[in-house]
Image 1 (cartoon, protein in one colour):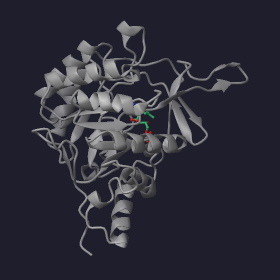
Image 2 (cartoon, rainbow, N blue to C red; image 1 turned 90 degrees about the vertical axis):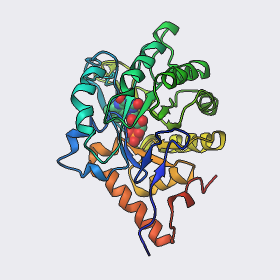
Image 3 (cartoon, protein in one colour; image 1 turned 180 degrees about the horizontal axis):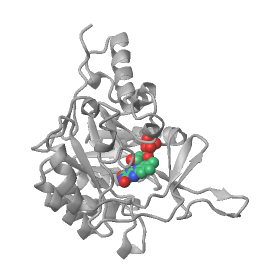
Image 4 (tube, protein in one colour; image 1 turned 90 degrees about the horizontal axis):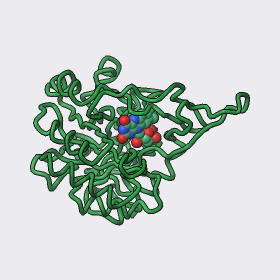
Length: 309
Ligand SMILES: Cc1cc2nc3c(=O)[nH]c(=O)nc-3n(C[C@H](O)[C@H](O)[C@H](O)COP(=O)(O)O)c2cc1C
């Protein structure tokens, strides 16, 4: 059998579009700026790279410790340590401009205006193929509640970004909500070209010896295999509620995990925590998907997207 068709269009209604050669991406915050992995992984074979979360000003991040291993997962409270948008545009984007793999910039702001400013800065930057909007971030003017916790603020952030850029815009949903479909519908109505989910689930660990929280920030985000069933069900629910393409993420470590997300309605997947154990995981997953399709006689990935809905 011929090699199956794996390419996916993640922004069909955007003029620029976001065409990936295959559906396997590296998740934000787990693959740096791509450059860090270039010597160990053939990064150009990835579907896309989502770079580290980027803010208007550089940020030093949260106090240590920031990472803690749990059963089947990891708690992190990195606190968005990053170089800031100016350095990203000056130092990283010119390198990406020469790459085959599309790089998508993950952004976060402390206010709606911040998101608009970030989008405007990225709009003309060469080497940037799209924007992923992290809405799992405290809205300072609303008493610190996450933008993504409420359909109104999630939609406002989406509209602010869309107003300032012609790049494809992916909105990344927070799982720390009561009804994820409500938020997904709100960001779709506000113009999101695609939706990615999920970000990490809030959690903590306590050191029984010191009788204190382990993480310097007390609370962290849980990721890894432990969250996969939660993420999968959220993707399934959102896929039944929206028409825009969905990118599934959360505990994906094998091709079989990725296929579950695709069958639940995801057009593409992101691999995060699994990269820490083996940076080649995304490419292993890609090869596994291809093998599965050949074995099952599937010519085009589209035959599998949403197969379980
Ligand atoms: C150390 C670490 C840093 C992360 N940083 C970001 C970030 O900057 N922006 C973002 O949207 N998500 C960030 N995430 C969330 C991941 O992109 C992903 O949504 C989440 O970890 C679930 O996927 P996984 O179980 O495959 O890791 C981070 C996750 C980890 C573990």
